[in-house]
Image (cartoon, rainbow, N blue to C red; front, side, top):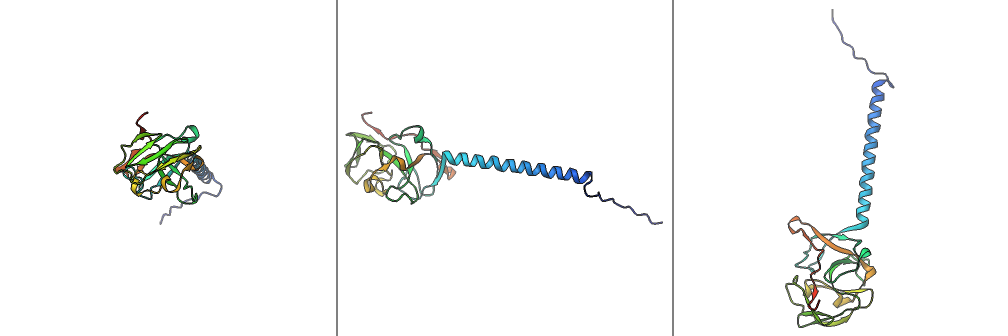
Length: 199
């Protein structure tokens, strides 16, 4: 006599169905919590920092085109810009353009003079160990209140305050802190190196 084995399918709403539904609800709840936490962290990080790609050679040898940099957006809400800071800002003549990145040379009230390859701030020689070339373009500028005078480290290939004027403080996005890409060029940018000889 042939023997047959039958399998009993649980009826809808039975114990197996209830257990599966509970597991699905738990999975969906955990997934939603994870997504919400990730979203909150993303928004928090973006509220205090930005990531930008360097598009030009104007900051060589400190920054190269293609470098990615982390910017502290709270730096100047909690403190004041310092001479030597590398900052990211909206281009004053056209704020809708991609942000610029340059080095702070003159602070509000400073008098900046470029002469025979050297930079002077308030008649004191500025020591700039990050430069590889001398500054050819000369001139003299008075920095107004609530403004900064900025220059690129690649002095002879940089569009900066010598060409289009000062950067209002309200156009500053933040202070560049770290090169994070590519990994072999990782480095900190948070230390001011430009120092007037008399300070």
